[in-house]
Structures are given as C-alpha cells and as structure tokens.
Amino acid sequence: MKGKLPLYLTVAVALLALVESAFALLAPARVAGDADWNAAAAEVREGFRDGDLIVFAPYWADQTGRHHLGDKISVEMAGHADADRYPRIWELSIRGAHHPDVDGKKPARETRHGKVTVALYQQPAVAIAYDFTTHSDEARVTEAPTSGSGGGGNETPCYKELGGYRCGGVRIEPRTLEIDYAPRRGILAPASNGRVTRLEWTDIPLGTQLVGYTGLHDYYSRKNADGPVDFKLFVDGKERGKVHHLNTDGWRRLTVDTSAEAGGKHTVRVEISAPNAAWRTFGFHLEARK
Image 1 (cartoon, rainbow, N blue to C red):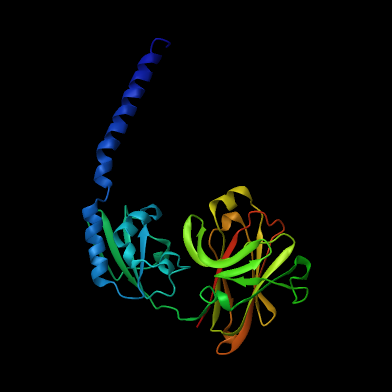
Image 2 (image 1 turned 180 degrees about the vertical axis):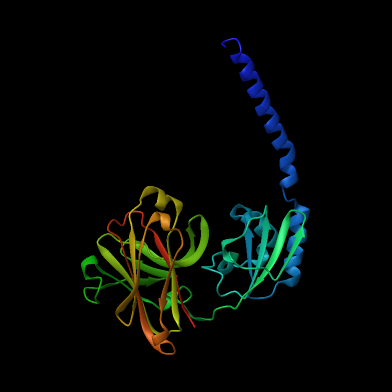
C-alpha cells in the first residue's frame, strides 16, 4: 500500500492539472467581450427614454456595464432605492443572472448580443408626492437626550451649514451611501452617544404610503462595530413605524400605510438613536407615495 501511495498522488495531481487546463481553455468562451457589450449598449441607447432605469446583472458586472452606458446613468439612478418609480427597466445581464429589481417580472422583449442579454421590463410606476432626501434642506434637525425621544422637549438645534447640518460632532447630509456594497441615495445621519437625532418636515403632502429604506453606510463601519440602530417614523407626533437595524439587514424597507392622511399636509418626523453610537454611520431614504 505504501508503494502505491505515490502513484495515487501522481494521478491526482495529473487530473487536477487536466481540470485546470480545461477551465483555462473554456473560460474565455464564457466571457462577454467588448463587441457584445457595445452591441447591447447600442440597443439600449436607441430605445432609451427619459425616466427609464438601467441595471446590470450579476452585481459584479456593474462596472463593465457603466463603462459602456455610464453617460445614461445619473447619480440618482445609480443609487435608486428601488425600481418602483420607473415605468421601464433595461437589464443587461450575463451568465443567466437577473437583477433583484426585476425579480418575478417578465420582460416585454429580450434580445441577445453574444454573451450579453438585453431585456426590457415595463410596469406601472408609482408617483412620488414628496422625496425627503431631495428636500433634506427643508427639515428641522435637532438632538435630544435619548430618554426623551418620544417627545419634543429638551431639544438642541443642529446648525445648518453648506449642504447639510452639524449636530455636535456629526454631520447630517444627503449623499450617495454605500449600503451592502451597493450605492444608495439617501440621508447620512450618524447616531450620537446618549442622544436621539430628529429630522422633522412640516406641511408635507402625503399619499397612500410612506416608504423608507434604512442601512449602515460604509464597509469599515460595519466591520468595526455591530450594534443596532433604532429608526422611528412619526406622522403628526404619532409613531407609525420603526426599524431595529443590524449590520446584516442590508438595505431594509419600511412601508407605512397613510391612506387616512392622503390628500392633506402633515408633519413627518424621523428619530435615530443607538445604544452604542461608535461607528454607527446610519443612512436612510424616505418617500411619500401617491
């Protein structure tokens, strides 16, 4: 048996080398080349309309896709919260992958350009009554002791500065966030130790829903700490929704039914706090939808 062991090892090494050689020879045949991407991008350019959304799949093909269609992709499109507001979605995909924005949807049309597939999806788009990220400069921003987070007293105003607000040692501002390794448009509102941060908008037109998304911005923040962040949503002083957000939650959706308030103007407030605020660079996006 001892004499046969080297033979087994020799055969195993030879088989491994054979498999790796086969992969090396076959791998280029699976790769989409520039000609494929150029042809796919040309189709999208020809049919693209203002208000369309462009996505790529799998996620790691995003940079290649933007290299060919980056001039059609605005910052807002790249960091979109979800696809609900877009009536048409262009998906450029390879290797049979699909973007999460088209899960469960059937394409209106689909074509192949070599290794790249272009699919066009159509859907009824939701109408936005108010985008809180766009109107972040209209908020009243304050801080208060955590123990008083349910009321309006003991508040310290945050100071408005170019492009955002300064609350003690943290800055609150609209920006493109990095949530779960993807760009997301929203408001960066880092938690403060022993304090609750409040952003309040008044005279806001509400529709049938408030739709929010929450996340923890920046890989290093998620690497260096794992404590929760509490996000609460109030309408006219009444709590209507909350999220206990953890590192593993990614880009988490919160939906609040505001059918009873639709058509009127109301006060909307969000509150952010964390038991341990170190490295809790929290971000959120909020919309009132008709």
